Image 1: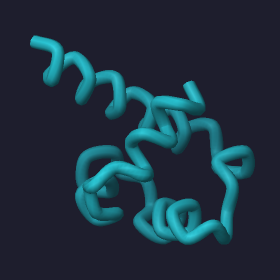
Image 2 (image 1 turned 30 degrees about the vertical axis):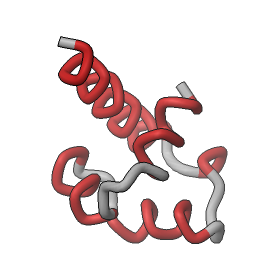
Image 3 (image 1 turned 60 degrees about the horizontal axis):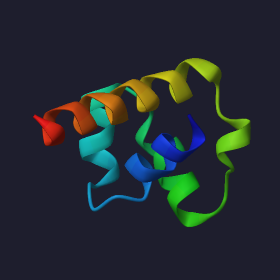
Image 4 (image 1 turned 45 degrees about the vertical axis):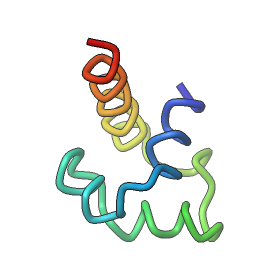
Length: 63
């Protein structure tokens, strides 16, 4: 799960793009990208949203 979340957050997508696709607060995404917050300390619901989005992206790329 962690690897997929990291792939999404540290991809070339902007924090705004990730926010619009997942609903996860843009500030949280920026904080993780900038190293102010760890993935370990985000709410499970936010981690799950990012994870699910990451899985959807992988499915689209592989098809």
